[in-house]
Each structure stands twice: as C-alpha cells, then as structure tokens.
Image (tube, rainbow, N blue to C red):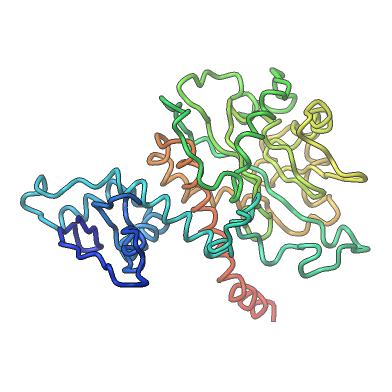
Length: 378
C-alpha cells in the first residue's frame, strides 16, 4: 500500500487484522491507525493524519496549493529521480476535501451526529463581540441604535471562477453550511430577479457599470461578502458569487442593520423593489435598513451623497471607516489564481475555509486586542 506522509511517499506492506472484535472493513482499520484511505473499498493509498493537517495549515497560512504541496513531498522522497515517485495528486485532492469537511463537522459538533447534518451557517464562526440577540444580550433592547448591527458589504473582482466543463459531475460536501449561501436557492433567486441595465446615477462607479461587461468564460466574476464593520468578521451564510459584474440584487438578504457599501447610494434606491419582485426574499416587519458609504469611497461620490450617506451624520454608526473588508481581501487575492479553475463545490469550500480561518484568528485574538485598546485609553 502507498503511504503519503509529511516526509514523503512510501510503499509499505500491510497485514490486516482478523482478530475477533476488530473492524472487518479495511478502510476502518486504516482510520484507527491514523491513516486516511483514498478509497473505502480495497484501499491502495492512504494519507497520514499528520500530513493532511500540514496541508490544511499550509493552505491557510502560506496559501500553498495542493499541487505545490505534493511536489514538495515528491522532492523530499527522491529529489534526484522525481519521476520514480508515484503521482498521488488526484487522490490527495479528493482526500483533502473529505478531511477538511470531516474536521469542520467535528469542530462544530456534527462529527458523530448522523441523524441531522449541519444547516445554513452551522459550520461557520460569527463575531464574538457584535450584538447577538438571544446569545449574550436580551432579544429586545430599548436603545436599538446602541446595539444596531453595523455591516460592511463589498465585492472582490479578483476572486473569479471559470466555467466548468462538466458541472453535472460536481459534488458539494458542505453547501450552505459555511459562509457561502445555498447554491440552488441562490441560482433560483438570480433566475427570478429582474436584470437592471441602469447606469449609475452618481459617479462612474466600476461596481455598478461592470454589470454590462462581457464575462462569457467566467461562471463568477467575483464574490460579494458581508462583514461586521467594527471587527472584520465575515457574516455566516451571506457570501455570494457575482454572476455579471456587481449586480446589486446579489447582495440583498441583510437583516435590520446599518449597511455600509461602496455604492450604497445606488443599492439603496431599488432595494425594497428588488425584494418585492423576488419570491425568495422577504423583509421582516418594521425593519429599518440604513444605507451608508465608506469614508474612503465617499470622496469619489457626488456632493449630494455626502450629507445623506456620510457615517459621521448617522446615529449609531460610531467611529468606523467601513474599509475593513479591503484589508481582508488582501489574503484572498493570494488564493484566487489557484481557486479560479477549481470545481464550483471545491471553490466554495476553499473560500469557506479561509473565511473561517480569518474569523478564528479574530476570535482568539480579540480579547488581547480589547485589553490593549483599554490600556491605551487609560
């Protein structure tokens, strides 16, 4: 059997256990030994748990692709005659997806629950400091402006995705359970939403006018994400693929909050109309959505936008610049070339992993950050 470890690729003889009470299936024996089989029937290749953990951390921290990682293992095995090392790249791609999905289900409490799987956003971390009604604050709060959720919406046109040759063969392992929205429901929403060819009524914004460009070879021209304006944590089950430029009916679906958007002056004009025309979108009763424009992008708008959409003039906006998502896109741009040609399901899983990693770093470091800020004020 071929064993792929963090130090190389090796061939080993395996003696299967036939003792009474032992697992009769070979792939279960490998799993108990810390080896992840490439197949559940007559496995011929297995990957050590340690190697899969190294690949996962390298992908998150170093933005290493699976191809580059396996090339490293090949050189560690035989640097002089690399063609003699068995190519297990395809098996590694399949096993790495299963490994990440298994780890996520285990971390979020679904590893041993076979009766019910994770629902929308159940495999995602939310911001530990933003108001979460029913979790660490009452469901009803008198001063609504004080606990108003301040969300930032922005698009990244670097995170493109190419058309698949055989999309019917694609398999989703964790559709809608992370930060990306449910694929089937989102596609139904796009099909029913009305296409708008209107030009920007404000300045010549790329986010609005790019919708008329030609993107024939791309399935998605980028991604649109929502994050909290204060701490920069991605909001679970709110990230979408842009199908044609930055079509604004792709960014709807936000609850009661202050929504800060580069082109908030245009997005706010027909938001209610888009919701009414789409059967898949609804707004809660008595909802109030306040639109604003980030301080950096506001300088490119017309003068009439300053008084209406400037954060300094909005009650409850606090002292935020709204540009925190721009800093988060920097790390995503490093993985975009690798994820561009993946399958749609794999592309979604990669984005979910890196959003989870970003939120995880915020979660474990936010206490130290608050202490440092408090000492600065003292």
